[in-house]
Image 1: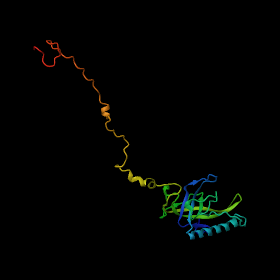
Image 2: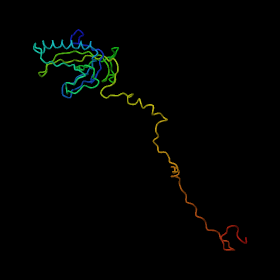
Image 3: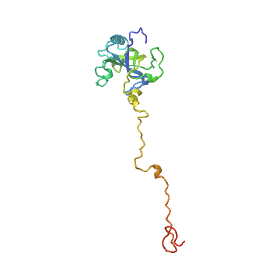
Image 4: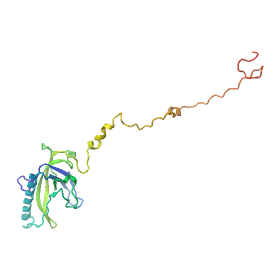
Length: 236
């Protein structure tokens, strides 16, 4: 994508959603797997929106001359959607993260280059997720497919600007465990062993061997009186 190409745009700061930048994604409805990302462009970024509108118009002119037999179609499908409206696919409202944004998806058969602020390649895939902020290079192009004529959006390269709150239900370890970390100190960890109740025999008591008590021996008989000897023998 050449910077001198009127159909080429480098966005300002945008938010990324439905990120498939390291592994191509196959649409469940069919089609060739592609690298893709949904781009959320703040409506406050008027300059980028103007560049996109100009690039789309340039792509339409290219379509008239090269794709649509010199005729401008009465209905041209445009890839930019209002995040405050409804999704064209099913008529349902866009997600809350799309409010106040223009929403569009860019894709490519070729893997994009993904770099940081210093233009160093980002290798760690965990750094790229739905919710980060970035700049993206894109190019708009005309197409004619099964009688449908419109403008597509090709994905170029991605520069990550900063982290953001993850989208799509993803959480961080701090989100999951941060609030309760202080509870689990050694003084506060609950004991899960059953305490020995009062007045209950202990293990050692329960397992202490018992011995039979000796049987009392028969009392000695005084040979003089015939009575049991309790002291000394009479007459002795």
